Image 1 (cartoon, rainbow, N blue to C red):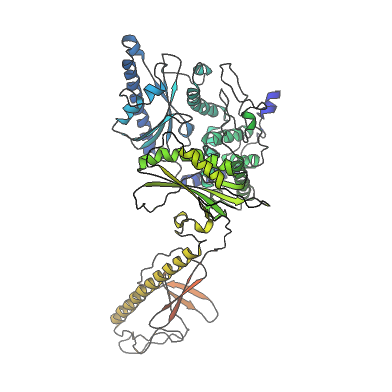
Image 2: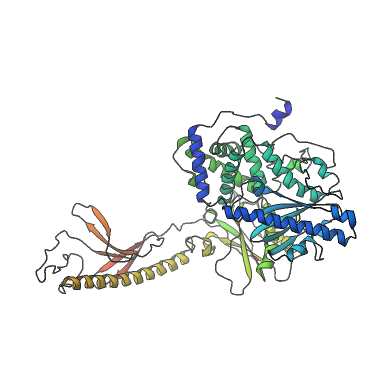
Length: 634
């Protein structure tokens, strides 16, 4: 083992083969992931292949038009070529239904990004795709860190990047793994090309592709469910998750996927960050491209959670991590490690426990709500992307004052806006730091607002509003129940609604019950004994079952009750035993999620029935009340 192998921790930690129990756990994991619809159908897989064929044809047509626009003909036109390559989750084999596809378009030197890839001219790729009958929702993003065109082709979402080589000829069998393709390229092209180069290198470095793919699928679902899946916001992304899984596979080359998942959490929950994670030695080919090198004073030296890409030039794939998001990821990995120990070691839990969604809107005292809107859904797409990319700057501005946790996924009110505008919302959970005096968040929030509104390409109608809310002030549509259980007024309204609904259901079902009994009585010739009523302490009705002779009375002391979720017959024996039986000929009403501890009294003709509903715990700690432009004090 060389000194560098020791530095980069490249040697296996264990070469023990997977045990039978581990294999069964991996099979159970795969079954769970399939039950969560993480695998695309055969038809969708075929459709993706057809879309790639169609896109490749458009790209070939595009490069011909570029040649003609520049006056290149004859042999030059005949040899003109541009290729497409896939990377990301599709190339890794871990994409799911409806997932987008990352595409790299590689073109020759004379096809520029600014005038030939983007732009309104007829020969540009943007224009050709916009005119294509199967293309919809096309959005060019030329100002992005990695410029791209986002679109839908025949229902498949595509993100197309462009890499411009410093050669006038692009071979059909271009080898992107060679560092020579980077020679003379601009930074944007290097970033674009490295998407494919990193993906292919990862696949070449893992000992077992199938184990790697299953574990990576699981980790991506876990990160999404726990609210830590967003590279832009400073959380984990697809590339760095792939590197962490690949590293764990290198350390345990013969382990099953279940073991890889457990070991990953066990190792990285307590990893000594900022020690970097490498899949292989850092290479330097002297192409004037600076690879990862954390020398004092450099940007690399300030990285909090460096996960290094394996292809030249090596880069930190988690450069957006902030202290707040690092703390969140450590906490979530530690939580996942403990669950995995119960699954893998103790056998006291199943995989569903690992993938339970985070209770974000119950975990914090207060929240910063960033509401954005635009005139149309099309305008909202770039506006949402810009605000999302700046949200980590808000976290960075306030994390020295409070404990902050941003939620990566935008939240949309299911009720359409009355003004017809397209809207979206982002939330940041905030809590006071222990032993900290009250703090004012108005200034950092104002700086964030100014930064966002200064966007050069901001269109008319793009608006943003930032407010601070107590937990009890959160809108009800954020909660699965449809109301905010931490808001006493919302709870009272919900109680009244459910009580009214319960009374209406009970009244209807009581009437249906009486009609059923009348019909059954008529069919037997005796009908109801009008002298008897269903009531507490009254014996069971006498029914003439023999054409006029009185039936034997039921002396068991049965009490019939009405329930708002359906009519049931409860038999309580003198010994205290209960037998629950649905009444015949009566349709049951689907039970609604109840509220605890609320008793609603419903009057009937014969007695007073009590309907029990459940009510949640409304004791929530809240700390921030002020709303801009007032002072935000915690």
